[in-house]
Length: 275
Length: 311
Image (cartoon, rainbow over all chains, first blue to last red; front, side, top):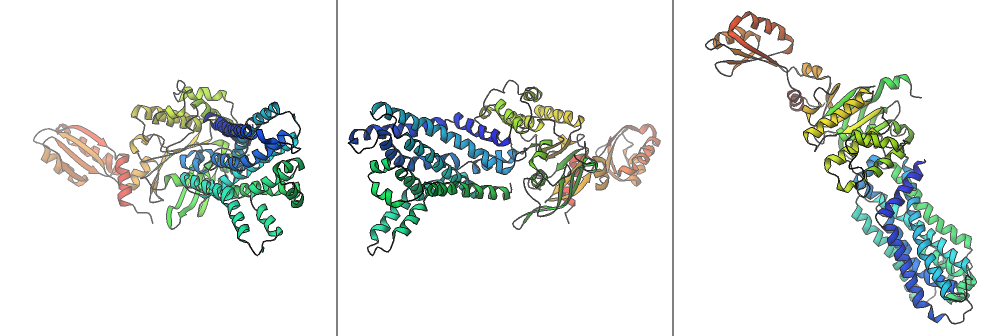
Protein backbone atom coordinates (compact mmCIF):
# COMPACT_ATOMS: atom_id res chain seq x y z
CA UNK A 1 0.00 0.00 0.00
CA UNK A 2 1.24 3.46 -0.84
CA UNK A 3 2.48 5.59 2.07
CA UNK A 4 0.31 8.49 0.92
CA UNK A 5 -2.81 6.39 1.12
CA UNK A 6 -1.84 4.87 4.49
CA UNK A 7 -1.36 8.35 5.96
CA UNK A 8 -4.62 9.66 4.49
CA UNK A 9 -6.63 6.73 5.85
CA UNK A 10 -4.92 7.09 9.23
CA UNK A 11 -5.88 10.76 9.34
CA UNK A 12 -9.47 9.96 8.42
CA UNK A 13 -9.73 7.19 11.03
CA UNK A 14 -8.31 9.64 13.54
CA UNK A 15 -11.12 12.02 12.59
CA UNK A 16 -13.67 9.28 13.18
CA UNK A 17 -12.10 8.28 16.51
CA UNK A 18 -12.03 11.74 18.01
CA UNK A 19 -15.55 12.45 16.68
CA UNK A 20 -14.39 15.17 14.32
CA UNK A 21 -16.33 13.70 11.43
CA UNK A 22 -19.51 13.50 13.50
CA UNK A 23 -19.10 17.03 14.83
CA UNK A 24 -18.54 18.50 11.35
CA UNK A 25 -21.57 16.67 9.95
CA UNK A 26 -23.75 17.93 12.78
CA UNK A 27 -22.47 21.46 12.49
CA UNK A 28 -22.98 21.71 8.74
CA UNK A 29 -26.17 19.63 8.53
CA UNK A 30 -27.75 21.14 11.64
CA UNK A 31 -27.20 24.77 10.70
CA UNK A 32 -28.17 24.11 7.07
CA UNK A 33 -31.46 22.52 8.13
CA UNK A 34 -32.16 25.27 10.62
CA UNK A 35 -31.48 27.90 8.00
CA UNK A 36 -33.70 26.19 5.44
CA UNK A 37 -36.53 25.72 7.93
CA UNK A 38 -36.48 29.40 8.79
CA UNK A 39 -36.05 30.50 5.21
CA UNK A 40 -38.48 28.12 3.53
CA UNK A 41 -41.58 30.26 4.14
CA UNK A 42 -41.09 33.42 2.08
CA UNK A 43 -40.02 31.96 -1.26
CA UNK A 44 -42.73 33.84 -3.17
CA UNK A 45 -42.61 33.59 -6.95
CA UNK A 46 -39.19 34.55 -8.12
CA UNK A 47 -39.03 31.89 -10.71
CA UNK A 48 -36.40 29.90 -8.93
CA UNK A 49 -36.65 26.38 -7.54
CA UNK A 50 -36.34 25.56 -3.88
CA UNK A 51 -32.87 24.05 -4.34
CA UNK A 52 -31.61 27.22 -6.01
CA UNK A 53 -32.94 29.33 -3.17
CA UNK A 54 -31.21 27.06 -0.67
CA UNK A 55 -27.97 27.53 -2.63
CA UNK A 56 -28.19 31.24 -1.79
CA UNK A 57 -28.72 30.56 1.93
CA UNK A 58 -26.12 27.81 2.15
CA UNK A 59 -23.50 29.84 0.27
CA UNK A 60 -23.71 32.49 2.98
CA UNK A 61 -23.49 29.78 5.61
CA UNK A 62 -20.55 27.94 4.04
CA UNK A 63 -18.53 31.09 3.68
CA UNK A 64 -18.30 31.17 7.48
CA UNK A 65 -18.51 27.53 8.54
CA UNK A 66 -16.43 25.68 5.97
CA UNK A 67 -13.26 27.78 6.54
CA UNK A 68 -13.80 27.40 10.28
CA UNK A 69 -14.07 23.61 10.12
CA UNK A 70 -11.14 23.42 7.71
CA UNK A 71 -8.88 25.52 9.96
CA UNK A 72 -9.88 23.56 13.06
CA UNK A 73 -8.94 20.34 11.26
CA UNK A 74 -5.63 21.58 9.97
CA UNK A 75 -4.03 24.11 12.32
CA UNK A 76 -2.25 21.53 14.46
CA UNK A 77 -1.65 18.95 11.73
CA UNK A 78 2.10 19.53 11.76
CA UNK A 79 2.88 21.57 14.87
CA UNK A 80 0.79 19.19 16.98
CA UNK A 81 2.86 16.23 15.83
CA UNK A 82 6.11 18.13 16.40
CA UNK A 83 4.96 18.94 19.91
CA UNK A 84 3.79 15.43 20.76
CA UNK A 85 6.94 13.95 19.28
CA UNK A 86 5.12 11.65 16.88
CA UNK A 87 6.59 13.42 13.83
CA UNK A 88 10.12 12.48 14.87
CA UNK A 89 9.28 8.80 14.69
CA UNK A 90 7.16 9.08 11.55
CA UNK A 91 10.00 10.68 9.60
CA UNK A 92 12.32 7.76 10.34
CA UNK A 93 9.90 5.54 8.41
CA UNK A 94 10.03 5.10 4.65
CA UNK A 95 7.84 8.16 4.09
CA UNK A 96 8.81 11.29 2.17
CA UNK A 97 7.97 14.60 3.83
CA UNK A 98 5.74 15.76 0.97
CA UNK A 99 3.82 12.52 1.41
CA UNK A 100 3.19 13.42 5.06
CA UNK A 101 1.67 16.78 4.05
CA UNK A 102 -0.30 15.43 1.10
CA UNK A 103 -1.43 12.36 3.05
CA UNK A 104 -2.84 14.56 5.80
CA UNK A 105 -4.43 16.79 3.16
CA UNK A 106 -6.25 13.89 1.53
CA UNK A 107 -7.34 12.57 4.93
CA UNK A 108 -8.70 15.95 6.00
CA UNK A 109 -10.40 16.38 2.62
CA UNK A 110 -12.14 13.04 3.13
CA UNK A 111 -13.41 14.27 6.49
CA UNK A 112 -14.67 17.47 4.89
CA UNK A 113 -16.18 15.53 2.00
CA UNK A 114 -18.10 13.34 4.43
CA UNK A 115 -19.37 16.38 6.33
CA UNK A 116 -20.42 18.27 3.18
CA UNK A 117 -21.95 15.22 1.49
CA UNK A 118 -23.91 14.06 4.53
CA UNK A 119 -24.73 17.49 6.02
CA UNK A 120 -25.66 19.33 2.82
CA UNK A 121 -26.99 16.12 1.26
CA UNK A 122 -29.51 15.83 4.09
CA UNK A 123 -30.42 19.49 3.66
CA UNK A 124 -31.00 18.94 -0.07
CA UNK A 125 -33.12 15.88 0.60
CA UNK A 126 -35.20 17.88 3.06
CA UNK A 127 -35.63 20.75 0.57
CA UNK A 128 -36.69 18.42 -2.25
CA UNK A 129 -39.18 16.63 -0.01
CA UNK A 130 -40.92 19.71 1.41
CA UNK A 131 -41.00 21.85 -1.74
CA UNK A 132 -42.96 21.15 -4.91
CA UNK A 133 -40.25 22.17 -7.36
CA UNK A 134 -38.61 18.73 -7.16
CA UNK A 135 -34.98 18.31 -8.06
CA UNK A 136 -34.82 21.28 -10.43
CA UNK A 137 -31.63 23.28 -9.91
CA UNK A 138 -29.60 20.30 -8.67
CA UNK A 139 -26.67 21.43 -10.82
CA UNK A 140 -26.42 24.68 -8.87
CA UNK A 141 -26.68 22.76 -5.61
CA UNK A 142 -23.97 20.32 -6.66
CA UNK A 143 -21.77 23.24 -7.71
CA UNK A 144 -22.29 24.76 -4.28
CA UNK A 145 -21.28 21.48 -2.61
CA UNK A 146 -18.17 20.96 -4.69
CA UNK A 147 -17.04 24.57 -4.48
CA UNK A 148 -17.50 24.34 -0.70
CA UNK A 149 -14.99 21.50 -0.80
CA UNK A 150 -12.63 23.68 -2.82
CA UNK A 151 -13.07 26.50 -0.31
CA UNK A 152 -12.39 24.02 2.49
CA UNK A 153 -9.30 22.74 0.67
CA UNK A 154 -7.94 26.29 0.50
CA UNK A 155 -8.36 26.79 4.24
CA UNK A 156 -6.96 23.37 5.07
CA UNK A 157 -3.88 24.32 3.05
CA UNK A 158 -3.69 27.71 4.82
CA UNK A 159 -4.01 25.91 8.15
CA UNK A 160 -1.01 23.71 7.25
CA UNK A 161 0.98 26.80 6.37
CA UNK A 162 0.28 28.18 9.84
CA UNK A 163 1.11 24.78 11.29
CA UNK A 164 4.53 24.62 9.67
CA UNK A 165 5.40 28.26 10.40
CA UNK A 166 4.81 28.44 14.15
CA UNK A 167 6.65 26.63 16.95
CA UNK A 168 3.80 26.01 19.33
CA UNK A 169 0.36 24.53 19.04
CA UNK A 170 -1.27 27.37 20.98
CA UNK A 171 0.27 29.96 18.65
CA UNK A 172 -1.12 28.02 15.70
CA UNK A 173 -4.59 28.06 17.25
CA UNK A 174 -4.40 31.82 17.73
CA UNK A 175 -3.12 32.40 14.23
CA UNK A 176 -5.92 30.26 12.78
CA UNK A 177 -8.57 32.31 14.59
CA UNK A 178 -7.00 35.56 13.41
CA UNK A 179 -6.76 34.28 9.83
CA UNK A 180 -10.41 33.26 9.88
CA UNK A 181 -11.48 36.58 11.32
CA UNK A 182 -9.53 38.59 8.76
CA UNK A 183 -10.26 36.62 5.61
CA UNK A 184 -13.84 35.63 6.38
CA UNK A 185 -15.20 38.58 8.35
CA UNK A 186 -13.04 41.70 8.45
CA UNK A 187 -11.95 41.76 4.80
CA UNK A 188 -15.52 42.14 3.53
CA UNK A 189 -16.35 44.69 6.20
CA UNK A 190 -13.28 46.72 5.31
CA UNK A 191 -14.14 46.52 1.63
CA UNK A 192 -17.66 47.74 2.35
CA UNK A 193 -16.34 50.54 4.54
CA UNK A 194 -13.90 51.71 1.90
CA UNK A 195 -16.65 51.68 -0.68
CA UNK A 196 -18.96 53.76 1.54
CA UNK A 197 -16.23 56.25 2.34
CA UNK A 198 -15.25 56.57 -1.28
CA UNK A 199 -17.40 59.63 -2.10
CA UNK A 200 -15.18 60.68 -4.96
CA UNK A 201 -15.74 57.25 -6.51
CA UNK A 202 -12.07 56.72 -7.07
CA UNK A 203 -12.47 52.98 -6.79
CA UNK A 204 -13.56 51.88 -10.20
CA UNK A 205 -15.25 48.60 -11.00
CA UNK A 206 -11.93 47.15 -12.12
CA UNK A 207 -10.17 47.73 -8.82
CA UNK A 208 -13.21 46.61 -6.88
CA UNK A 209 -13.42 43.35 -8.83
CA UNK A 210 -9.73 42.77 -8.22
CA UNK A 211 -10.22 43.35 -4.50
CA UNK A 212 -13.12 40.90 -4.47
CA UNK A 213 -11.17 38.28 -6.36
CA UNK A 214 -8.25 38.65 -3.97
CA UNK A 215 -10.30 36.92 -1.29
CA UNK A 216 -11.03 33.19 -1.57
CA UNK A 217 -14.35 33.55 0.24
CA UNK A 218 -15.59 36.32 -2.07
CA UNK A 219 -14.48 34.30 -5.08
CA UNK A 220 -16.53 31.41 -3.70
CA UNK A 221 -19.52 33.68 -3.20
CA UNK A 222 -19.33 35.13 -6.70
CA UNK A 223 -18.97 31.67 -8.19
CA UNK A 224 -22.09 30.34 -6.51
CA UNK A 225 -24.28 33.39 -6.95
CA UNK A 226 -23.44 34.10 -10.57
CA UNK A 227 -22.69 30.76 -12.21
CA UNK A 228 -26.39 30.02 -12.61
CA UNK A 229 -28.87 32.73 -13.65
CA UNK A 230 -31.66 31.25 -11.61
CA UNK A 231 -29.55 31.45 -8.44
CA UNK A 232 -28.69 35.06 -9.22
CA UNK A 233 -32.37 35.82 -9.51
CA UNK A 234 -33.11 34.16 -6.21
CA UNK A 235 -30.32 36.13 -4.58
CA UNK A 236 -31.72 39.31 -6.04
CA UNK A 237 -28.47 40.17 -7.79
CA UNK A 238 -29.39 39.04 -11.28
CA UNK A 239 -28.26 42.33 -12.79
CA UNK A 240 -25.00 42.32 -10.89
CA UNK A 241 -24.39 38.77 -11.91
CA UNK A 242 -24.89 39.56 -15.55
CA UNK A 243 -22.49 42.49 -15.40
CA UNK A 244 -19.81 40.88 -13.25
CA UNK A 245 -18.94 38.71 -16.19
CA UNK A 246 -16.33 36.58 -14.43
CA UNK A 247 -15.76 33.32 -16.24
CA UNK A 248 -16.39 30.27 -14.08
CA UNK A 249 -12.99 28.97 -15.12
CA UNK A 250 -11.32 32.12 -13.77
CA UNK A 251 -13.12 31.79 -10.44
CA UNK A 252 -12.29 28.10 -10.15
CA UNK A 253 -8.69 28.79 -11.16
CA UNK A 254 -8.31 31.45 -8.47
CA UNK A 255 -9.70 29.15 -5.80
CA UNK A 256 -7.40 26.36 -6.93
CA UNK A 257 -4.46 28.72 -6.54
CA UNK A 258 -5.51 29.27 -2.94
CA UNK A 259 -5.14 25.52 -2.47
CA UNK A 260 -1.97 24.89 -4.44
CA UNK A 261 0.19 27.82 -3.34
CA UNK A 262 -0.11 27.36 0.45
CA UNK A 263 0.16 23.59 0.11
CA UNK A 264 3.32 23.81 -2.00
CA UNK A 265 4.81 26.42 0.35
CA UNK A 266 4.08 24.18 3.33
CA UNK A 267 5.82 21.24 1.65
CA UNK A 268 8.86 23.37 0.79
CA UNK A 269 9.14 24.72 4.35
CA UNK A 270 8.62 21.28 5.87
CA UNK A 271 11.26 19.79 3.60
CA UNK A 272 13.84 22.20 4.97
CA UNK A 273 12.71 21.91 8.58
CA UNK A 274 15.17 20.24 10.95
CA UNK A 275 13.84 18.23 13.84
CA UNK B 1 22.16 -3.05 -3.83
CA UNK B 2 24.27 -1.97 -0.91
CA UNK B 3 27.92 -2.46 -1.73
CA UNK B 4 30.41 -4.45 0.32
CA UNK B 5 32.24 -1.46 1.79
CA UNK B 6 28.99 -0.05 3.06
CA UNK B 7 28.13 -3.31 4.76
CA UNK B 8 31.49 -3.26 6.52
CA UNK B 9 30.83 0.20 7.96
CA UNK B 10 27.13 0.47 8.67
CA UNK B 11 27.61 3.89 10.24
CA UNK B 12 30.43 6.14 9.12
CA UNK B 13 30.60 9.64 10.58
CA UNK B 14 33.58 11.85 9.80
CA UNK B 15 34.19 15.31 11.25
CA UNK B 16 30.48 15.87 11.85
CA UNK B 17 29.56 19.24 13.36
CA UNK B 18 26.10 20.46 14.27
CA UNK B 19 25.45 24.04 15.30
CA UNK B 20 22.16 25.62 16.31
CA UNK B 21 22.75 29.35 16.06
CA UNK B 22 25.99 29.95 17.89
CA UNK B 23 25.60 26.85 20.02
CA UNK B 24 27.66 23.85 18.92
CA UNK B 25 25.85 20.69 19.91
CA UNK B 26 27.99 18.14 18.06
CA UNK B 27 31.66 18.96 17.53
CA UNK B 28 33.92 17.18 15.12
CA UNK B 29 32.64 13.67 15.72
CA UNK B 30 34.28 10.68 14.04
CA UNK B 31 32.51 7.42 14.61
CA UNK B 32 32.20 4.23 12.66
CA UNK B 33 30.17 1.18 13.52
CA UNK B 34 30.73 -2.14 11.81
CA UNK B 35 27.99 -4.54 10.77
CA UNK B 36 26.68 -6.58 13.67
CA UNK B 37 28.37 -4.43 16.27
CA UNK B 38 26.62 -3.15 19.39
CA UNK B 39 27.87 0.36 20.02
CA UNK B 40 26.89 2.31 23.12
CA UNK B 41 26.99 6.09 23.38
CA UNK B 42 27.47 7.34 26.90
CA UNK B 43 27.25 10.88 28.17
CA UNK B 44 25.43 13.35 30.35
CA UNK B 45 22.11 14.82 29.36
CA UNK B 46 22.83 17.44 26.75
CA UNK B 47 26.12 15.87 25.68
CA UNK B 48 24.83 15.63 22.10
CA UNK B 49 23.85 11.96 21.97
CA UNK B 50 20.33 12.58 20.68
CA UNK B 51 21.48 15.14 18.11
CA UNK B 52 24.15 12.73 16.85
CA UNK B 53 21.46 10.09 16.41
CA UNK B 54 19.22 12.54 14.59
CA UNK B 55 22.08 13.28 12.21
CA UNK B 56 22.42 9.56 11.51
CA UNK B 57 18.67 9.25 10.99
CA UNK B 58 18.65 12.15 8.52
CA UNK B 59 16.21 14.14 10.69
CA UNK B 60 18.69 16.97 10.74
CA UNK B 61 21.67 17.86 8.55
CA UNK B 62 25.26 18.37 9.71
CA UNK B 63 26.66 21.93 9.65
CA UNK B 64 29.98 20.42 8.55
CA UNK B 65 31.44 16.98 8.03
CA UNK B 66 30.02 13.83 6.58
CA UNK B 67 27.46 11.31 7.79
CA UNK B 68 26.91 8.03 6.01
CA UNK B 69 24.49 5.35 7.10
CA UNK B 70 24.17 2.05 5.22
CA UNK B 71 26.37 3.55 2.54
CA UNK B 72 24.32 6.69 1.86
CA UNK B 73 23.77 10.19 3.20
CA UNK B 74 20.70 9.78 5.42
CA UNK B 75 19.51 13.37 4.85
CA UNK B 76 19.26 12.98 1.08
CA UNK B 77 18.83 9.24 0.57
CA UNK B 78 15.44 8.10 -0.67
CA UNK B 79 12.77 7.34 1.90
CA UNK B 80 12.83 3.68 0.92
CA UNK B 81 16.27 3.23 2.51
CA UNK B 82 14.75 3.88 5.90
CA UNK B 83 12.97 0.53 5.68
CA UNK B 84 16.16 -1.07 7.03
CA UNK B 85 16.21 1.20 10.12
CA UNK B 86 14.56 0.91 13.48
CA UNK B 87 14.42 3.81 15.92
CA UNK B 88 13.22 4.15 19.47
CA UNK B 89 13.24 7.85 20.36
CA UNK B 90 13.80 9.13 23.86
CA UNK B 91 10.36 9.50 25.50
CA UNK B 92 8.49 7.94 22.60
CA UNK B 93 4.99 9.27 21.88
CA UNK B 94 2.01 7.79 20.08
CA UNK B 95 -1.48 8.91 19.16
CA UNK B 96 -3.08 8.30 22.51
CA UNK B 97 -6.56 7.52 21.21
CA UNK B 98 -5.28 4.60 19.14
CA UNK B 99 -5.12 1.07 20.48
CA UNK B 100 -1.71 -0.56 20.76
CA UNK B 101 -2.58 -2.94 17.96
CA UNK B 102 -3.66 -0.06 15.69
CA UNK B 103 -0.46 1.85 16.37
CA UNK B 104 1.75 -1.09 15.49
CA UNK B 105 -0.35 -1.99 12.43
CA UNK B 106 -0.02 1.59 11.18
CA UNK B 107 3.77 1.53 11.44
CA UNK B 108 3.91 -1.98 9.98
CA UNK B 109 1.95 -0.83 6.93
CA UNK B 110 4.31 2.09 6.44
CA UNK B 111 7.23 -0.33 6.40
CA UNK B 112 5.36 -2.65 4.06
CA UNK B 113 5.14 -5.43 6.63
CA UNK B 114 2.21 -7.80 6.94
CA UNK B 115 0.15 -6.98 10.07
CA UNK B 116 0.38 -10.67 10.95
CA UNK B 117 3.96 -10.10 12.08
CA UNK B 118 2.69 -7.67 14.70
CA UNK B 119 1.19 -10.43 16.81
CA UNK B 120 4.48 -12.19 17.46
CA UNK B 121 6.16 -8.88 18.24
CA UNK B 122 3.47 -8.09 20.80
CA UNK B 123 4.20 -11.44 22.43
CA UNK B 124 7.94 -10.80 22.43
CA UNK B 125 7.63 -7.47 24.19
CA UNK B 126 4.95 -8.82 26.52
CA UNK B 127 2.15 -6.55 25.39
CA UNK B 128 -0.14 -9.16 23.86
CA UNK B 129 -2.74 -8.72 26.62
CA UNK B 130 -2.77 -4.92 26.38
CA UNK B 131 -2.78 -4.76 22.58
CA UNK B 132 -6.48 -3.90 22.41
CA UNK B 133 -6.36 -1.09 24.93
CA UNK B 134 -5.92 2.56 23.95
CA UNK B 135 -2.32 3.76 24.31
CA UNK B 136 -3.63 6.50 26.60
CA UNK B 137 -4.11 3.87 29.34
CA UNK B 138 -0.54 2.52 29.02
CA UNK B 139 2.04 2.94 31.75
CA UNK B 140 5.45 4.41 30.95
CA UNK B 141 6.92 0.91 30.73
CA UNK B 142 4.21 -0.32 28.38
CA UNK B 143 4.63 2.70 26.13
CA UNK B 144 8.35 2.04 26.03
CA UNK B 145 7.70 -1.60 25.10
CA UNK B 146 5.37 -0.49 22.32
CA UNK B 147 8.20 1.81 21.22
CA UNK B 148 10.61 -1.11 21.07
CA UNK B 149 7.97 -3.17 19.24
CA UNK B 150 7.74 -0.62 16.44
CA UNK B 151 11.54 -0.38 16.26
CA UNK B 152 11.76 -4.16 15.87
CA UNK B 153 9.30 -4.25 12.94
CA UNK B 154 10.73 -5.97 9.91
CA UNK B 155 13.96 -7.09 11.64
CA UNK B 156 15.91 -3.90 10.91
CA UNK B 157 19.51 -4.04 9.78
CA UNK B 158 20.32 -1.09 12.02
CA UNK B 159 18.68 -0.16 15.30
CA UNK B 160 18.90 3.22 17.05
CA UNK B 161 17.84 3.21 20.70
CA UNK B 162 17.86 6.54 22.47
CA UNK B 163 17.91 6.02 26.25
CA UNK B 164 15.73 2.94 25.85
CA UNK B 165 15.48 2.02 29.50
CA UNK B 166 15.12 5.39 31.21
CA UNK B 167 12.25 5.24 33.65
CA UNK B 168 11.92 1.46 33.56
CA UNK B 169 12.12 -0.72 36.66
CA UNK B 170 15.08 -3.13 36.93
CA UNK B 171 13.22 -6.29 35.91
CA UNK B 172 11.73 -4.59 32.87
CA UNK B 173 15.16 -3.24 32.07
CA UNK B 174 16.61 -6.74 32.03
CA UNK B 175 13.79 -7.97 29.83
CA UNK B 176 14.41 -5.04 27.51
CA UNK B 177 18.11 -5.73 27.11
CA UNK B 178 17.32 -9.40 26.66
CA UNK B 179 15.21 -8.50 23.62
CA UNK B 180 17.94 -6.27 22.24
CA UNK B 181 20.52 -9.03 22.74
CA UNK B 182 18.28 -11.40 20.79
CA UNK B 183 18.18 -8.93 17.92
CA UNK B 184 21.94 -8.44 18.08
CA UNK B 185 22.51 -12.17 17.84
CA UNK B 186 20.46 -12.26 14.66
CA UNK B 187 22.90 -9.78 13.11
CA UNK B 188 21.29 -6.43 13.80
CA UNK B 189 23.76 -3.58 14.24
CA UNK B 190 22.73 -1.33 17.08
CA UNK B 191 23.56 2.04 18.53
CA UNK B 192 22.24 2.62 22.03
CA UNK B 193 22.58 5.79 24.02
CA UNK B 194 22.49 5.78 27.78
CA UNK B 195 23.63 7.65 30.80
CA UNK B 196 23.38 4.63 32.99
CA UNK B 197 26.69 2.79 32.79
CA UNK B 198 26.09 -0.24 34.88
CA UNK B 199 23.36 -1.54 32.65
CA UNK B 200 25.42 -1.38 29.46
CA UNK B 201 28.47 -2.96 31.08
CA UNK B 202 29.21 -6.27 29.36
CA UNK B 203 26.56 -5.66 26.71
CA UNK B 204 28.40 -3.23 24.50
CA UNK B 205 30.97 -4.31 21.95
CA UNK B 206 32.36 -0.81 22.05
CA UNK B 207 31.61 2.31 24.06
CA UNK B 208 31.90 5.91 22.93
CA UNK B 209 31.97 8.53 25.65
CA UNK B 210 30.50 11.90 24.69
CA UNK B 211 31.14 15.16 26.46
CA UNK B 212 30.00 18.61 25.35
CA UNK B 213 29.24 17.38 21.86
CA UNK B 214 32.55 15.62 21.29
CA UNK B 215 33.55 11.99 21.58
CA UNK B 216 36.33 12.02 24.18
CA UNK B 217 37.01 8.28 24.13
CA UNK B 218 35.93 5.27 22.11
CA UNK B 219 36.79 1.61 22.41
CA UNK B 220 36.06 -1.64 24.17
CA UNK B 221 35.72 -1.49 27.91
CA UNK B 222 39.22 -2.96 28.34
CA UNK B 223 40.70 -0.43 25.90
CA UNK B 224 39.02 2.47 27.64
CA UNK B 225 40.27 1.33 31.01
CA UNK B 226 43.82 0.89 29.67
CA UNK B 227 43.76 4.34 28.03
CA UNK B 228 42.44 5.88 31.21
CA UNK B 229 45.41 4.43 33.09
CA UNK B 230 43.20 3.77 36.07
CA UNK B 231 44.69 1.50 38.72
CA UNK B 232 43.37 -1.92 39.57
CA UNK B 233 42.83 -2.61 43.23
CA UNK B 234 44.36 -5.70 44.83
CA UNK B 235 42.62 -6.26 48.13
CA UNK B 236 44.49 -8.47 50.60
CA UNK B 237 43.33 -10.17 53.76
CA UNK B 238 46.31 -10.74 56.06
CA UNK B 239 46.96 -12.60 59.34
CA UNK B 240 46.76 -10.33 62.38
CA UNK B 241 49.99 -8.72 63.33
CA UNK B 242 51.58 -9.16 59.89
CA UNK B 243 49.93 -6.16 58.23
CA UNK B 244 52.89 -3.85 58.58
CA UNK B 245 55.31 -6.41 57.19
CA UNK B 246 53.13 -7.19 54.14
CA UNK B 247 52.59 -3.51 53.45
CA UNK B 248 56.28 -2.87 53.56
CA UNK B 249 57.17 -5.65 51.15
CA UNK B 250 54.59 -4.49 48.61
CA UNK B 251 55.30 -0.77 48.92
CA UNK B 252 57.33 -0.70 45.73
CA UNK B 253 54.46 -2.15 43.68
CA UNK B 254 52.06 0.74 44.10
CA UNK B 255 50.09 2.82 46.52
CA UNK B 256 49.21 1.08 49.76
CA UNK B 257 46.14 1.78 51.81
CA UNK B 258 45.78 -0.06 55.12
CA UNK B 259 42.06 -0.28 55.75
CA UNK B 260 42.48 -2.00 59.11
CA UNK B 261 44.55 -4.70 60.90
CA UNK B 262 43.48 -7.40 58.46
CA UNK B 263 42.92 -5.64 55.20
CA UNK B 264 45.27 -3.90 52.79
CA UNK B 265 44.42 -2.29 49.48
CA UNK B 266 47.13 -2.03 46.84
CA UNK B 267 46.52 0.32 43.92
CA UNK B 268 48.62 -0.63 40.91
CA UNK B 269 48.52 -0.51 37.13
CA UNK B 270 46.74 -3.27 35.28
CA UNK B 271 49.91 -4.07 33.35
CA UNK B 272 51.80 -5.03 36.48
CA UNK B 273 49.03 -7.23 37.86
CA UNK B 274 50.80 -10.58 37.38
CA UNK B 275 54.07 -9.32 38.88
CA UNK B 276 52.15 -8.14 41.91
CA UNK B 277 50.29 -11.43 42.30
CA UNK B 278 53.56 -13.44 42.13
CA UNK B 279 55.05 -11.21 44.79
CA UNK B 280 52.00 -11.77 46.97
CA UNK B 281 52.16 -15.53 46.47
CA UNK B 282 55.78 -15.43 47.58
CA UNK B 283 54.74 -13.90 50.89
CA UNK B 284 53.37 -17.26 51.93
CA UNK B 285 50.69 -18.01 54.52
CA UNK B 286 50.44 -14.53 56.04
CA UNK B 287 48.23 -13.59 53.11
CA UNK B 288 44.89 -15.30 53.68
CA UNK B 289 42.80 -13.80 50.87
CA UNK B 290 43.25 -11.88 47.59
CA UNK B 291 40.70 -10.04 45.46
CA UNK B 292 41.58 -8.29 42.23
CA UNK B 293 39.17 -5.53 41.22
CA UNK B 294 39.51 -4.01 37.75
CA UNK B 295 38.28 -0.42 37.40
CA UNK B 296 34.53 -0.35 36.98
CA UNK B 297 32.88 1.36 34.06
CA UNK B 298 31.67 4.00 36.48
CA UNK B 299 35.28 4.81 37.44
CA UNK B 300 36.37 4.92 33.83
CA UNK B 301 33.43 7.13 32.99
CA UNK B 302 34.06 9.60 35.77
CA UNK B 303 37.73 9.67 34.81
CA UNK B 304 36.86 10.76 31.26
CA UNK B 305 34.17 13.12 32.47
CA UNK B 306 36.41 14.88 34.94
CA UNK B 307 39.83 14.75 33.36
CA UNK B 308 39.44 14.71 29.61
CA UNK B 309 38.40 17.92 27.87
CA UNK B 310 37.28 17.99 24.26
CA UNK B 311 39.78 19.93 22.12
